[in-house]
Length: 239
Image (tube, rainbow, N blue to C red; front, side):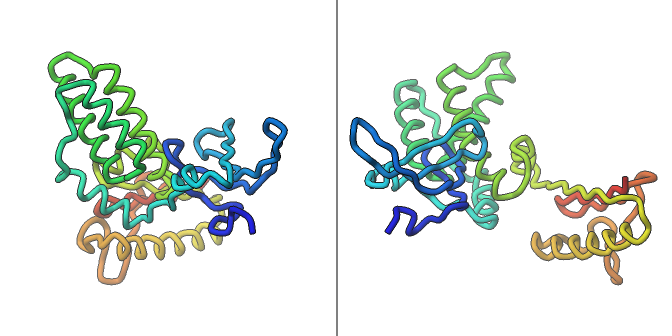
């Protein structure tokens, strides 16, 4: 039985402070004259890196975590404004605490850390100052770790994650060749998807271009139809 009894090739997981990784399988390598088997991981956002986790190292394998679900991400984001600050006046205390948060892999704690340092940065910028290099490093590491996973699960770019957290808005673009039959078919699927998203995110029917008969699309340009509804923007663009 391989070490991938609980994992299989192609699975996407979160691994320690590395973040989102794809399981490539198992391999055998000779180290200091001894053959060892390894689980091979490919970090999703570090395409030139490959990790080899010894199958007999139970401590390292405890760092394997399933990715969050969309609902879990929504819950974390919803709770972020209510989380208490992790700020400590002592730099040594901050370093110890923030290292523990990063090593724990607890996404709620990571979100708490990101929020703490984001608000601290905002406060300092208003005074013409900047974060201490120590805090800047922890801020970047925590943000990368959390946002990488949000990006992978939500299907949005890492750059869009901050805006998603800040505003709850998602923009979805569809590109369709300019051919009447293809475009009309795409338009139909576009309308169906919009309705399902309304249901999924419990959008208010009265917001945007919605009527009793369904969705009304409006042309915002000669080649673009767009709808905005309670945090979701959908655009169908013919090319």
